[in-house]
Amino acid sequence: MKRIFTLAFALLVLPMLASAHSGEPGHGHSLALLDGFLHPFSGADHLAAMLAVGLWSGLAMRRVWLAPLSFAALLLVGALSGWGGNLVEPMVAASVLVLGLLAAFRLQMPAAAAATLVGGFALFHGMAHGAELGAGQALLGMVLATALLHAAGLLIGLQLRRHSPVGSRLLGGGIALLGLGLGVGQVARMVAA
Image 1 (cartoon, rainbow, N blue to C red):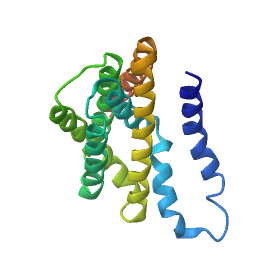
Image 2 (spheres, rainbow, N blue to C red):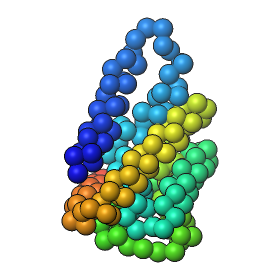
Image 3 (cartoon, one colour):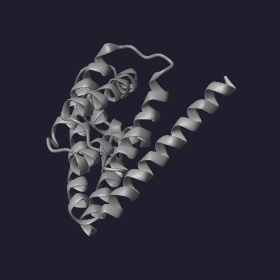
């Protein structure tokens, strides 16, 4: 359990350490890859969804790599699509809620269905990221960070699968509550507009 908390702490601190030097003179546009890499760490919604994909895969899937691979691939497709629209942020919030619930309850489903569900959510995450990052090296950095976050979630999920069913329920439930809060915030913004 101590390893899980150490990994979670490292994931929270890494972006702060890396971004502490991003404003130094002489770095300029060469930071596109780093900026893209740090981007998924900058928002709780994306960070939680990417960790949740790995977590759920580690807790409930036989082919633990399939859902994370689907997410990373379709995240890139969504980012390159250039489409945005009003559904992007509500779908990002819904993904955090659903992925958290899937992890909390260790729900199993056929690999193709899991990859399709996760891939659908990834399209919306990609659209949100792509609108913020543009194209090029920043997208490569984003996909690399996504893979890292999936791997971290997967390692946590595999540890919790073996040692702590209560821990997986708490972590998945916390992610789901974050998604619920994000969704309520989205609805409130739509009503106010």
